[in-house]
Length: 104
Image 1 (cartoon, rainbow, N blue to C red):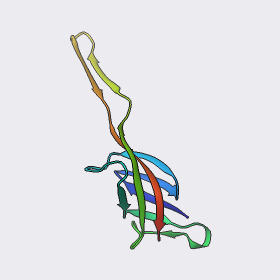
Image 2 (image 1 turned 180 degrees about the vertical axis):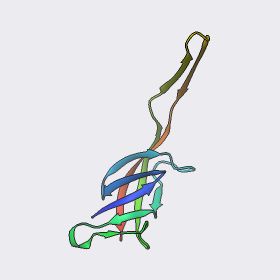
Image 3 (image 1 turned 45 degrees about the vertical axis):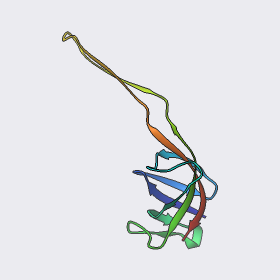
């Protein structure tokens, strides 16, 4: 079964067993379970249902495999002939999750 979910400000099309990298869930540890209640659509073929905007009673259960940080990106700003240069780095906190079940 397939579903479209909204989590951490992003939308994903998922099926059971998929592994996703999303923004980190606050106060969570590796091995814990997460219930995602923002399901936009679920099913395939004849049993496909779409919410307006969310489906009532539908949920997706996922397990957090690990919490990690992404690669560092460098934000460099410069204004020519002004002598202004600013360099800043950023690493995003991420969670790797595995979809366990889809409840329609």
